[in-house]
Length: 104
Image 1: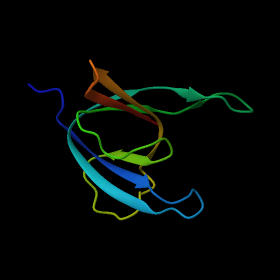
Image 2: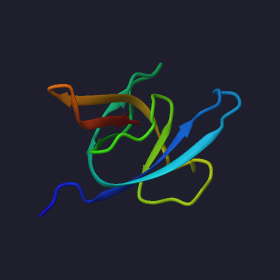
Image 3: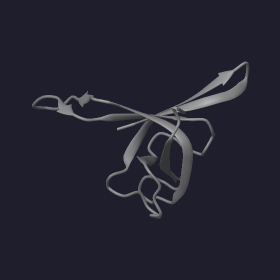
């Protein structure tokens, strides 16, 4: 059984935070892992799930973009899309191996 059986939709913002210009990409053969997390708050920590997607391709993606599990035909990211917090490419002897994308 393959471990990369998920599909994700990525919305890359080619504009600015105030004038977003979204470009949508659907990526297949992705592995998605979920973990429970929290963020500090003024009254106490708030629970917030974290997703890590392992991509074996190199789509245009950066921190601040949006990602969600499953294919989407929407031009702009829906409310269910998570904000990308980290993009970490991995190489093997200088050659691209995979990319880890963390979102909350």
